[in-house]
Length: 235
Image (cartoon, rainbow, N blue to C red; front, top):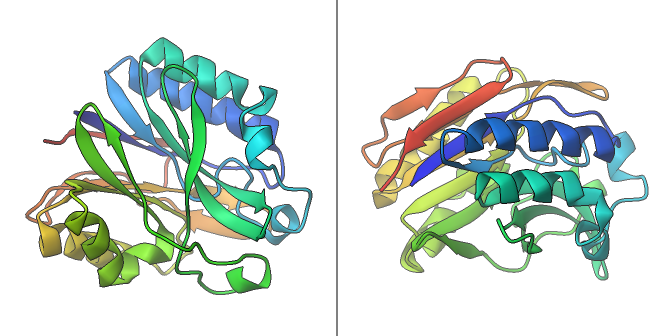
């Protein structure tokens, strides 16, 4: 399987713009046969102004809002793992959004380990999650989840051979990002795919750092802070 960690900026609360950016990157990665992972909260934007606004619901994700992303996934024949701040019945969460090539759209995972100011707006997820793509079991994670070794251990025990991480790291976090995901790869012999938010979103700046790590913790490919795609083959 070829995977692509898509690295890009997001506009706080501008879902139409962010969906269009995601669709463009999916089309680009799809030309190279890749399945795509997007950064943390890219669709909604990672910013307090977005988090306290009228967030999308799971019904919204199944509606016209994500049609450009569904069209890109269908054209590429690619499964896409995105992320958004989401309004669920029991509270707001930071969620993984999975778009299949046939247009099926689900939100199977909510970030379990909130960080910083996130508990101001969000409730933690209640369970880990995996998806299966092309017969490969993939574990889902969002940012600080990867800093909790037990999180990756749980999905590895469930049969995952790769760990997909949608992240948003602030300046000063580059070393922690690299050490964290290299360790998760080495802990369980996993490929780890890290898709990082970059640039400015609202009042914050993000560092990117997208990468794909092999099971021996080596970075097979890594980006700086530019928009782009970190692409590698995993087995």
